[in-house]
Length: 385
Image (cartoon, rainbow, N blue to C red):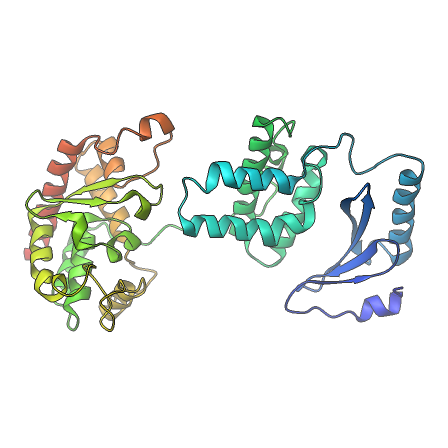
């Protein structure tokens, strides 16, 4: 059994850990040094956990008294943990993953979501019936995440929990999405917009700097093609020759490579075609990738290579990154009067209407071809100046 002296001497470690007292009561020590009381009981083979507060605000004596009250209610047939037994949060979350996430999301997204559930959510509310979970109990696990300074992760986990609760409503296991009660409760996250350049003079200077890049022809061509197509950096570096129709001036990115797992068509300007023809003798005869690594033609270029080249050109990460080509193009195209729907479709942004999204991969294609041709010529004119 624990003592006040022993609890006061507990020191934080790199990872959270817990020490048992007695009859299901234990204390959890966070890396931040904060200490929380928890109680864990089993009823009919079903495990429940509850937070009893933070030490020393809740003393050892108080924690034991709370535990004993819970035990007393259980002894007389009352269950303070639930009013009506149903599926656990973990069971609903796993069903949601299998039905709504695994079939349509990328592997990276799936790994991120499952990791956050396994590490940050399920150890605390996973075994609780989803109908019995309260907003304060969800907020408690979110506060643990905030204590590490990972505020954006806390917001992401709240979104995941909300999706699980809404799925639970759909299958009849949850009564409502309790995460709606937590709006505004988390520490705000400052928008993390990718830095970009929108001044035409500076854009011209950037294009000339890239054109004069010394060293790897592969890296220089990669930056130029990213400027002309403004696709996501991961889509560019994993581009394969088989995806391109140079005669038809079109790049078809397979659904499995796209963020939302939908085929994306990129019309290619004359300038983009020129870049591809320049790089073909270097990589087209030895690799399936347009931009492979120097050491291994069977692997795509690293995601850090393009940004490292921009750093060598004097563009620090606070000024411009590879992702900045997208917002640069979006800003300029909007300023020059191109329809926002055409721009958004070319950026492959999320289509909110799932039914419509299944049929619109070629939507506005003629207008997008015209727009991409204009964009290539506009960049070329700035480079010449």
